[in-house]
Image (cartoon, rainbow, N blue to C red; front, side, top):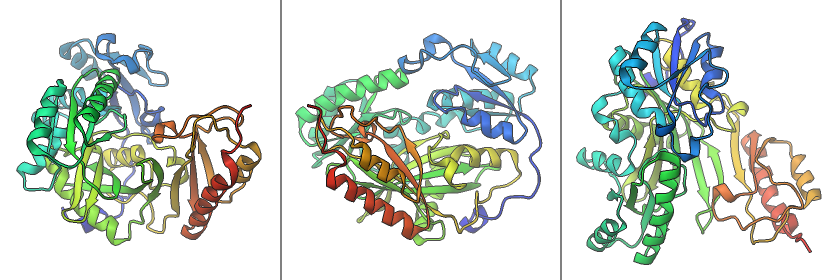
Length: 422
């Protein structure tokens, strides 16, 4: 399907009401429930039993709040019988934990879904890279294992200047670590394995050639027919020299870069076996090879910026495509600029200055504060995005957003973190 066809306007037909089963809706902040309910669909949660939920999700209750019913997965035959009795029209993954079960349930119920034979490709970073290489699409050489010695032997054989070590499961949110020595690989491997076991219940870790260049997050939706794909939004990520997140900027869909990345996504999605539903691609732009896939996730996640720009909500885009005949753009092309800015503490022991924080709060484009630390509390040096004392969502004209971003960085330099506890 051509890019021009994929970005045609949404069908004017109203969505027909149906029933959607959301598998493992953990960590989505009720996003799937909200969007499908808004479109008139009944929502059924499919919960995982305790022994199938990794430690990160052990505190989730049996009944998922807000859903009209919760079906506890206790074996394929029993789960299928319960869902068939409720006349399920669609099965989607509510998180990375639900991708495999979603594929199996969709297939067994005869509903739109992705190929069972390629589930592993949609969940494992190293397997994704190998699948692309088999199709002569540029990808970073990778391998995965549960044993760090396998990684060290592989690194000694290929001898790249630097590597990325990360959990093999692409749904794990732990930050990949850049390594250049065997000792660094061993240290990063231990950390990545703990993160993988905690979030995914798997000890598999990936080592991959580091690909230098700017990174982009592509949010896509596929279906209802095989071969139909839409890139609903693209975020450009900017990082500091130490690879700490600086800001993410929503790309103008009318620009050449958005178009080039969209064309690349149209090549990658079929290789990953993504024919239906939402996916998120992390892509690096390499000067020598162009766009290179780093990882892919076959489910939609909420964004803190979703409420401030119609084109940002991945879950909303996926819900509309699943309940309306045809793909289309999620908003008008004259979308306002959106930026997410991460605050960065320069050293341990700093505290946020309350007066300067109030100055930031008055910026005209500031629309939302994400997990902002309290003034007066001691902070640790920002080493990655998760250790930032807060993120700011800016929205408005491109010029106004850029001006407020520069002002935020100026306020940081003049003393936002200078106060220290005595």
